[in-house]
Image 1 (cartoon, rainbow, N blue to C red):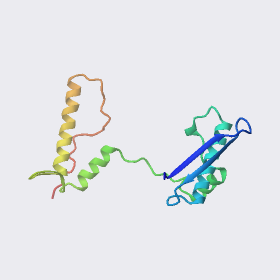
Image 2: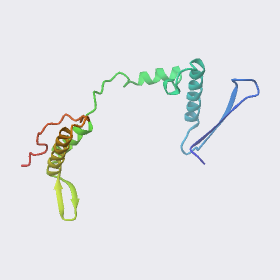
Image 3: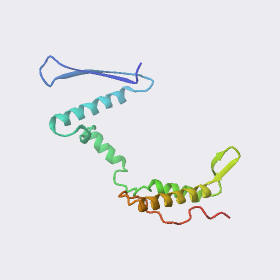
Image 4: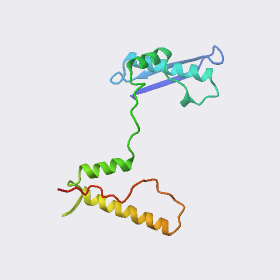
Length: 153
C-alpha cells in the first residue's frame, strides 16, 4: 500500500464537476489528516479556478481558516537574519576545529588549520591565474589573505 493514493475524475454533472477518492495508509495517516489534505487540495483548486492565469506555486493550498490558524501559531513575523554563506560556515568550522583532524588518509592526518591554509593558498593561486589570464570571471568570495584557523595553542 502506498502512503496515499488520490483519484479524481470529472463527474457526469457537467464541466467543472469532479469527484474523488483518497485511499491512505492508516499507519501513516489519520482520517483528520487525510481530510485536511483533501481540504487543502480543494482550496488549491478553488484558487486556480479563481485565478486561472496564476502559476500553481503562487496559489494558496490552505483554506482561509487554516491560514488564520497558522498565523496565530506565530513565527510568521520573526526575522531570522541572513544565513551565513558556505564560505563563512567553512571558515567558522576551520577556526572552531583548528586542532581536530579534517582529513585522515592512512597514517597521514591533516588538521582543519592545515587544511584551511591549503584551501586559502589554492584560492589565491586560482585568483592569480584568473587575473594573469585576463579571465572575465569574477570570484564571488570576498576573502583576503587572512590566516584561518592559525590559532593553534
